[in-house]
Amino acid sequence: MKVKEVIHLLEELAPLAYSEDFDNTGLLVGNAQAEVTGILVTLDTLEEVVDEAIAKNCNMIVSFHPILFKGLKKITGKTYVERVILKAITNNIAIFAIHTALDNAWNGVNAMMCEKLGLQKREILIPQPGTIHKLTTFVPYEAAEQVREALFTAGAGAIGNYSNCSFNHSGMGSFKGNEDSNPTIGNKGETHFEPEIEIGVTFQKHLELGILQALFSAHPYEEVAYEITTLNNTNQHIGMGMVGEFEEALTEEAFLKHVKSVFKTGCVRHSALLGKDIKRVAVLGGSGSFAIKAAQAKGADAFITADLKYHDFFSAENRIVLTDVGHYESEQYTKDLLVAHLSKKITNFAVVLSQVNTNPIIYY
Picture 1 (tube, rainbow, N blue to C red):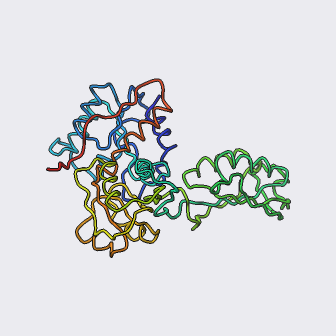
Picture 2: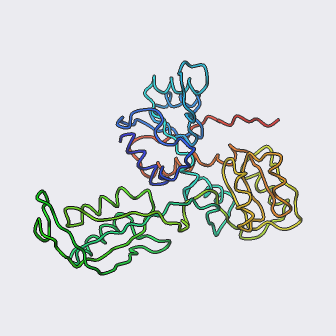
């Protein structure tokens, strides 16, 4: 199996198309055509992690966080980032980062947080805009069914719990081919009118290439007329953070004990307690202060995230209990998620969970 094939499997879980604009996801180091001998999964790619990959005969590292985030002007080994890159290149080790693509995935970072906490009735906290597109095309009557089926097979027409969704409208199309044309219907140089079906289907944006390939393959015309637009519809399964509910409400003290235990943290920083039970909870792995208002708007009794600053805690305004469990702690189960996903897909070589603790914070 090649590096590019492993990346394809990872994108089945978390398509890179949904990475945030500021992020640097994807293949950061290495050759996509290289054969993989083993995969090491880690939260962060440190020099010790590269050493571990070498020792375990893994020539591909799948990392949650990208080791390359900002541009490098020199690679001399003076910083930990430069040393990682040098050692990976020297030892022919590919490094792939998935970061915010997995943050935004339905079965990603935040789903793992919900699972570990025991939260049910999950929904996305902040849906990512612009992820639903619409394809409109025009097909002669006799070919409409085959085009529709090709589009459905490629993933178009799926809306929530429904599939094979489309809108079809009858009309009359016209065209005239020039001397270099080879029209399927009609004659070159003559204006031809053909009864056609206008087919409209929605799809998630990461499927666009495959859907267009299916359209061009199934459509009978030499030149296929189509248009793609971006919709403002809310995507129920792509976005930052999640909201869920405990089966039974917890007291605030029981909630904090549960959070501390689940995330194995040395300290839970939290805002003022409100004297009411906790049932509905918002979560967002990593730095999540930007989502405080969204958690309040969703009616969450508490919000679990990381990297809250002093003034962020004032934003609770006696409406919600804000809890900071630590950046590493909030994302620690990501490694298990990635190993489980890849292990189900790959059987001919090892997928290894890194044993290096990459948490830079130590509690005294």
